[in-house]
Length: 173
Image (cartoon, rainbow, N blue to C red):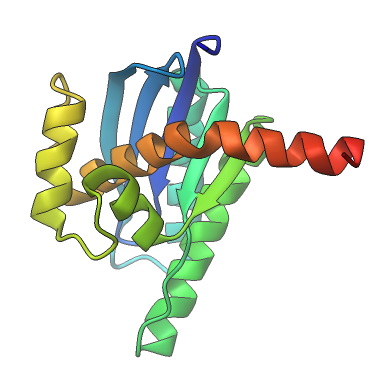
C-alpha cells in the first residue's frame, strides 16, 4: 500500500561539515530532491560555529519543504573532546527541524549503512555507490552529502514501523 508523498531531510551532523539531503517517497519509490554541505568557520569560537550551523540548517530546512527529518546518532570515539563537539553540533541538527515542527527520527550509523548497503560496517565509497544506484539524479560532492541521503533513505525504509509503534503506544493495543 502506498503512503502519501512524504519529503524527508536527512542530516549527517558535524561541527566542521554537516551534510544534508532531501528525498521524497511514496512508500515505494525514492526520488532525489536536493543535497548539500554546510561548513563552519574553523577559526571562530565554538558558540559562533554552532550558530552558523544552526542558521544554515534552519535556512535549508525552511526551503526544503520537508515534513520529516532523520538525524544520525552520535558515535562515541576515543577523543572525548571531539565526541562532545559532535554532540553539540548534533544538538543543532535536532533543534533546527524541531523548531519547524518536523517529526524527527534518529538512527545509528550501523543501521543507516545496513538500510542502504545491506551491511552495518560498509565503507564510505560503498555508501556513495549505493546512493548513485538508488538516487540516480543525485550528484554528491562529498561523503557527508551521501551519508545524509543515506540517513533519509534509512528513515524512508523505517518510518512505517516507527509510525505503527507510536500508534500502538498511543492506543495501548
